[in-house]
Length: 97
Image 1: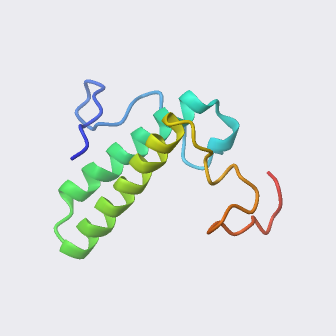
Image 2: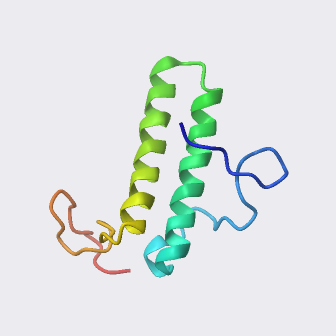
């Protein structure tokens, strides 16, 4: 289970969160890890509030994926979004941002 992120507001999301739509690839690794953890925390909170069991499962899977991305970066592994044509990652049809 992921621990909730604390910011004193009780919603588990940091004030420092960047708006969705900003590219994580532009952030330094440490900030990317923090953003991934915040996304995991926010998604985990949505899972806790979901009444539909299927939706809850989807949110938990998504939270686990964000958390796994953070762990991979912390371990020094490349972010699959940053590796061109990484196995299992389709190239961006719009090209580089």
